[in-house]
Image (tube, rainbow, N blue to C red; front, top):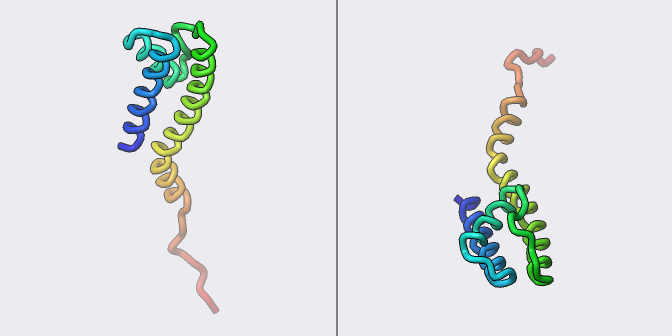
Length: 96
């Protein structure tokens, strides 16, 4: 739920940045943003100095968001695996 909100916020922010700095139509801005967020890279290389700066910062942000969201999504799975691996035997040696 939180991950979906972060993705939607990132997608909207990236689209606004590409529309503002690169004057891309919203469909092209969506495509570039989605490709960066998925790790594929931009489709339209930035042409303006502001667009280049924005694309670089957004690419760093997208990488960090991907790593953070992967941790959030996989944390319950990892927690379950760790509980499973922490096996304790019921056959304990008798105390003296």
